[in-house]
Length: 316
Ligand SMILES: [Zn+2]
Ligand SMILES: [Zn+2]
Ligand SMILES: [Zn+2]
Image 1 (tube, rainbow, N blue to C red):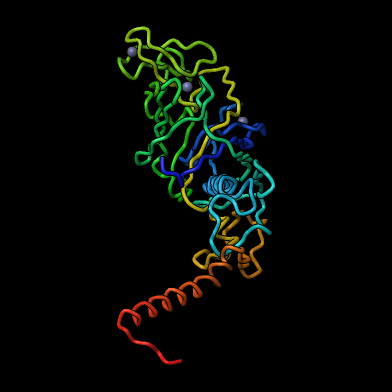
Image 2: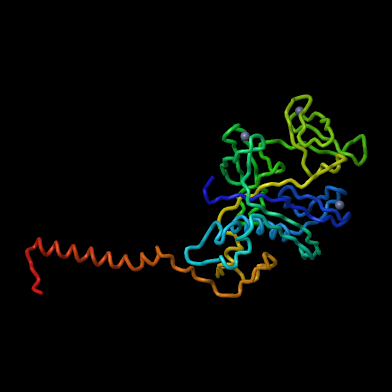
């Protein structure tokens, strides 16, 4: 994977508007609705909630842990305003409502972003990544376990810098169990094997099922876990990969291409002063002073040798 790409660990949840419980968001559920893991209600989810949450994750990945962060500008310093310089993890809490498609949609997402690299589940070593379009392939240097993960097709419209995702629901190398209404039991669902169409028997809490007939395994989509009964979906950490500087960094650097009002994205950051120039380092100063001197010296020496060669002496 290109060196400019970097990962951040996230964990997220939202408050269900029916039962009021916090329900985990363990993947990029960008289709406009989310399902409560406690009561099963499918409810509208604001696009701006994801936009803000993804920008928060990008900002933490880009800015946390050091004064200038990961993508320091050569001339501008953000050290005095970087809100994440002293932390390696930060949460973003949403409240209020967003008006989208003529509807008032509550914003109740809480996302915590932490500087952490994805590791192999089996042996705990850092994974190697390869990026192929919207897909990221991971491989473990020790146990050689390989996996593929794919971003939702509309992910770029939510976060332009988002280039990868790593969590079970986005696996591209594992088929998804087929879900249909159970013809014998009204309201219940029946799961079938995506390879052979055979009926699947699922044990309590099982997420990946192996078919009794063709022995191929498939993953049960998280949104159907509640309908299977006894769903106990817990918040699980997952990972996002970003490329390039975050919007928050560009805001702190007062990028003129950026609108002054980012519409709720990191509204706690005040971009009112003019950009601060970085102080020149001793190395910069040395270059500024020494470079012209060096040029003069070289030109003088050349002149001297050329004149000597031509046998010309300049009377002083
Ligand atoms: Zn609920
Ligand atoms: Zn491994
Ligand atoms: Zn099968």
